[in-house]
Amino acid sequence: MNGSGACIARKDKTVLLECGHPGFEAAGKELADYAELVKSLPAYHTYRITPLSLWNAAAGGRTAEQIIASLRNLARWGIPAGLEEEIGRLITRYGRLTLHANAADSRLVLLRADSASLLDELEGCSGLDALHLKRSGALECLCPAGCRGLLKQELTRLGYPVLDYAGYREGQELSLVWKQEGAKTAGGNEADFGLRAYQEEAVRLFYGTGGSGVVVLPCGAGKTVVGLAVMEKLQCETLILTSNTTSVEQWREELLQRTSLTCGEIGEYTGERREVRPVTLATYQMLTHRRSKGENFVHMNLFNERNWGLIIYDEVHLLPAPVFRATADIQATRRLGLTATLVREDGREGDVFSLIGPRCYELPWRSLEQQGWIASVECVELVVPMNPDLRSRYLYAGSKEQFRLAAGNPSKAAAAARIIAAHAGSKVLVIGQYLDQLNELAACLNAPLITGKTPQRERNELYAAFNEGTLKVLVVSKVANFAVNLPDASVAIEVSGAYGSRQEEAQRLGRILRPKQGENRAYFYTLVTGDSREQEFALRRRLFLTEQGYEYAVKAAGPPEEAMS
Image (tube, rainbow, N blue to C red):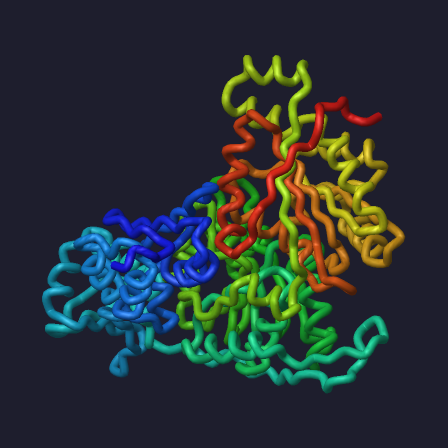
């Protein structure tokens, strides 16, 4: 208790980090390893220590003693009575229960506990009744192998995460090797296909888990390459699930450019094609398609179409609930999750943890920036005032309508135009939520618009023109939040978003993170209407990026102007 620490630890498991403290940045990096950022205010950032944040830390090798020592070092006035004990109690629950293969009967798995009293306690839990647990010894229970995922999911919910040692099927063998360095890409250019050090480390740590885990890397850091390297390591048939058709095409291109796989070995299972091959690429949307609300999901049997040895969940933070349910049934198949953020707006991070696997590797965004692997980004929140007419409508609207009016503030068009003029010659993405607003912006800025209704061929042509430099400004809806390969985009202007979505903010910043020629800099502007509910949601949207070390400069956009004609 030396009184000089950057943090104030509180007994409700929250930690306040003083923004003006000289040790602010280092303390934030340390806290992010075992706590989550829940509030970002100018004076203090608020972190919360949760069971899941502690269990992810434990999965990464952190002990209760290490976490408590870290908190003691950071806490200005020491740790409140009881908090150390609570941290110790929660983190030591990780590993008290383990799952094992049952040598006598492969239809069953064995749940082992470190004490008979723990199993006694769990026997009384109603949520476990339907899983047909049967006590087979003082420290053991038998469970049907088909309930393996549901058991892990329920025990995590009860506060006892399970270490799964029950093993994985090998899957059908598939020969896959890297192309040699200096091989030609599809565009005829030479490419160096060597893995970066952090990508090698991510693969090593995933392989060390035995076969399930999540790799967390920012957009532009090569998560797809990590997935390919895991495939190369395991040499088995693989199902790759991703967010949209554009992403399917990008995975296919990477597989053909970087590996020995042929076109005939790669299948696309999308709205346009139904190919099931040794490596199959599908979208979450296809898996969750059904003809009517009450019917079964038409394509969920894809999980059982072949003897998959690995399933890759790209953008795992987007995993729909029905795919979670299907994943619970295939726990004997190795699972790799790839994501830029573990944040889920539906609060189901625990299901990712129990059914896909714990976080096995994460590298802070700023660390990659310092190494030059992603661009250095300047973040600016531009406060746009309302004109008198909008202000009058806003004052008499309901709360939801107030947000919608503020998000669609027509003065944002003029603000966006000024930003584009200030970055003359740069490739600019204008990103928003509402189609009427985006149509007006596209007309004002004389730029093409891509939405969910834009045919895939037209999207590809516009993306290609943008990459080639013949198109400098592109207006995009939320379809461009994920898996859009626009490496030279250096300016992003966010004009509206999905309320307080931290996940969306991270993905949108990710559109401009790929390294740039020259000074390797990019600019992220978010336009927010002043004195409105939009500002409240903007604070929440910035949380994840603030945790990654990005600070927003808040500036005024100038007097309100009518939308440009």
